Image (cartoon, rainbow, N blue to C red; front, side, top):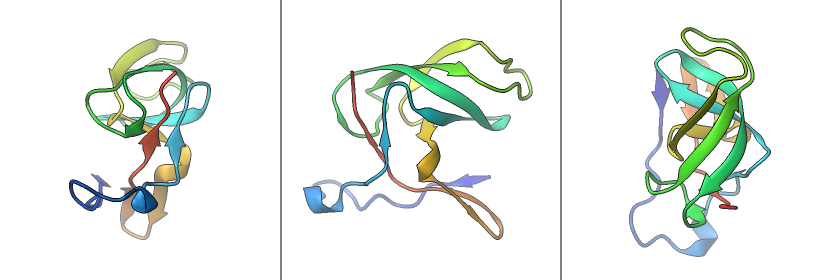
Length: 104
């Protein structure tokens, strides 16, 4: 199970923006029913800023996991594709910290 901590609410100041950023070309994880599947971001469409369902991310799977095979190219929203630095492993599971998205 992946826990997503509360991001701080609406109207958060820029000083509280996440320091981890999802960018095109960067390694990431696809958060799905098979767990965190390693991938590489190909492109991001939408507005830069905090990750939301408004941003569209195209990515390539880099390791086979469950139904997802290496080399597959998929498109999902930015909340389903997580930069690797935003994934923190804890004693009882994995936590995804808030992150921003840099659109290309």
